[in-house]
Length: 434
Image 1 (cartoon, rainbow, N blue to C red):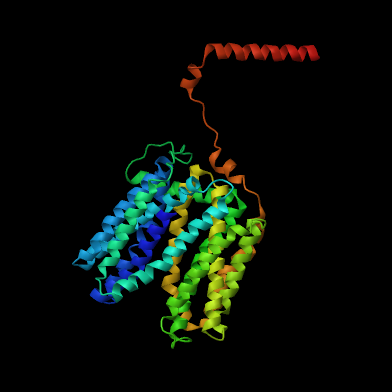
Image 2 (image 1 turned 45 degrees about the horizontal axis):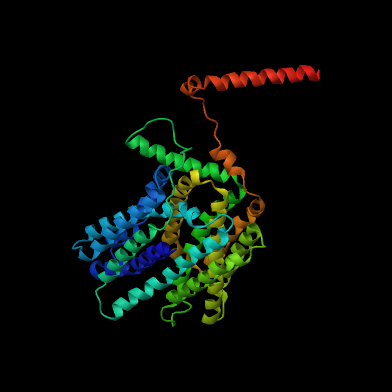
């Protein structure tokens, strides 16, 4: 949990400090915007290849290596003298995130015990929310006291090293039998393509094998798109409806974080409510919250609704990650997340690209769109969330194996004699019964 807090703290600080640094030194140019986008590109483009690595290597070591590389990249941003250098380092940080994200998700069964998935994932989500809330104020404090803005990147590097050290306390997970690997010994470009295809195929097979995972995964893509559109809508609302409120967007995100912290800790208390019923409820309540925002009478009402949205958002994430841990076998979890996370990042990219333009055209229409993208898929798939786990093990992991001829030749002769003897006894018993 401390490792997650440290990683997310550094990420949240950079999310604020990097745009400020680029605008200060290079202005709002296309090249500066590219430096921000490059952090997402590796995961969107080649993230699925990580699945095979996580199936064959200890995910703890993968997460530790990514933390070390991330620290090196972040620490060098303050000394960059050209924009292309910052672009290169942010691309490198994106590569480390491509490894770290799926690896940390695969490690969750090592720190969250069986039967305690809701509470454990709730605590991990709470750590993420606290770090997200802490990062922006820390950057503001650095600026307020007159320290160089590069201090934020040095602190991100330090937090990555803390995450690495804390990861040493996580029990190692031995490599699993790679059930999804192809029998061919492809190398180079063909091996990368095979890994990409394997992760994508595994994602499709997993969601076809369990109705809850199928519904929650498909609607998570539309959900992330809706939330990103909604946040762009908040930016436009701050410029129009609440132009007199200084830092409106920051206040909205802050109360979402507070609500998210509460939601992370409260979800485990509803153990008597089925995950399916709770998941559908929190998603629909959040959709109604987004729909209501443009019609609220004042800032206090908007803040209250955003707290509720934050609670529902975190509760949905906790339920989803808990069910993934319960329903998806460890052998294919790395493949699943390696294909899942890039699609989520792609949805974030789409929402960020078109959200502000849609909201600028009409706030009321934007709120209806956000609520529809979030709520309608949930209503269409509602019946899937009430199915018991158990289907994925038969469709993904339990694959029939061919017998090895060498093992047949090396069978113990005494075992064969015993088998023949037992067969004769069975025949004798049948004849006596007749």
